[in-house]
Image (cartoon, rainbow, N blue to C red; front, side, top):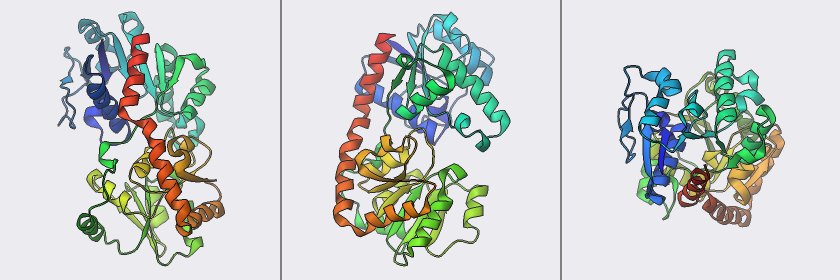
Length: 363
């Protein structure tokens, strides 16, 4: 088979959608090399982000969004692509007329569930693209059961057209050996970490719920621990950290190469977001051998399985209680770590590549 990908994010995005796109392409290259893969992107990338695929650029004078949304169909026909996979919530308009089968991965519909968190123009554009993709694609990949249910609820798509196929995190988080003490010590010194710490890695926004996490940490009065919040600067981060409580620190613009060691050194990882499409930071923590406390109510139970405790994200007391349980009960902590290691096996690249190839073959 010849499989084409919308690889714009794979070549040009360093975070969530980019990481997902690279994971899918790299897994298929490694575990299903008998097929041919083409990575389409509307502009030359600055670098290939480690991908062992050369970018396929527009053959027309028109590139950019117009090519990605419309004119790419001509290239797909010319290249005899059997299946085109839109890895980031959209497919080209008019792809059905090209005769090329299409798959779209939908990551979440949070903009519909919590519209107040998004500007009107963003909601309008997202809804137009996502709805079209869901209605016109030959198959839909949902990254969680929660996302599948949202697609069924908001777009009235029948369940048989939607396949839940999970994802894994980047391999740099796959802890194979204990942390290197000198390396870990050097990194912690770099960030002035002097105490045992609780870690949260997430963009700063109201939905990510760091404000309640800070309140839960304060309630526990943990003088011998720090709460370290890793993310990018935003108005929300400025708001919740402007009068930073004792023991709470924000780390901004941490390079991804430093994150595995930060995870591995943590006493506990917390992800209190009240709604997600999947929750990759939880998977990163489980691979790192760290127990997790996460929020109940969306898909985070799918990401964490039995490797985490779950708290009501709107209940500061519940968050505080779950944190205390893990920090004070070594048997519980060790059990969560062991169960987490077992749980993340289902997210392996080999398994997911097999599921995708099966789907492509069916089409």
